[in-house]
Image 1: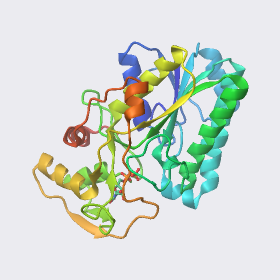
Image 2: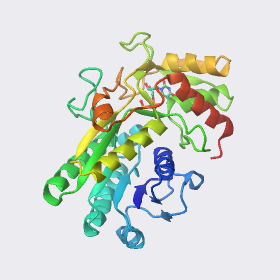
Image 3: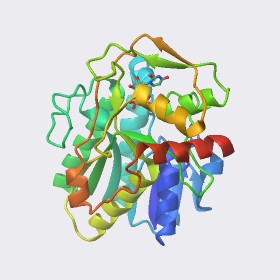
Length: 323
Ligand code: UDP
């Protein structure tokens, strides 16, 4: 059985679905602070906060857990700058609790949800795994600290980990009725689509004077199902006896904010209200992944390589969203 922390969240629910489709048994642990009960893909669910070590212990006693995929974390960059304490406790201390329980129960395989935010301002593009890691906000720092902890736990206790550094997760499963739903929503694609639906007045473009082809920020959008399949492949690599490792997960192509709006307008068939506004603090001009290592090392072959197809699945979710 695979323990999935944060399995009621956006990426965690898609990953659970992918594992179940592949025949794995899963148990989800989530405190539902940001996750959604409606997103759960299994009835093996414990509403547990990782701050509560006794409750985590009970989950390990109840289920025959063989490996862990750890998504549970706070992930608002701006909030992490304003309230770092919340982030260091929830993301770092609570991960230590989880790792304690893994060691106590001799569970020594973990796939960890890391981020391209651990790289900070890019020194070159595309970003490969050798790029220096200098996060520029507490959120990125919490994820980097956990990567370091995992390295040390491997050396000392033989805990094997694969850290996956995501670029911009997007889209929704084309068949299941699950998708992206954050409160507050801060991500570009859902905000653009909600503006098209009239749920928001306009989409603010955060800066159009960056050093990019059209002046707006360029990002690497990766479909959430392709993130999910990479987690499954990482898990299988660990089951096959692999040593610890880390991989970038992106498609390797960049799209600007303006391009995302234009492509959405074409798909939906209407113009979307937009307004150029101030730059958002901490946004590098361009973030694009070099995904060669993941393609080769995980034997990963992403299905959604065209941004239009990704946006279409997100649009379908926005039209039919349940939560
Ligand atoms: N963005 C924007 N307006 C918004 C939200 C986001 O212009 O209302 C831009 C943001 O500056 C970034 C890109 O869209 O360049 C993707 O932002 P998002 O928050 O979706 O993901 P992030 O890159 O922060 O992980």
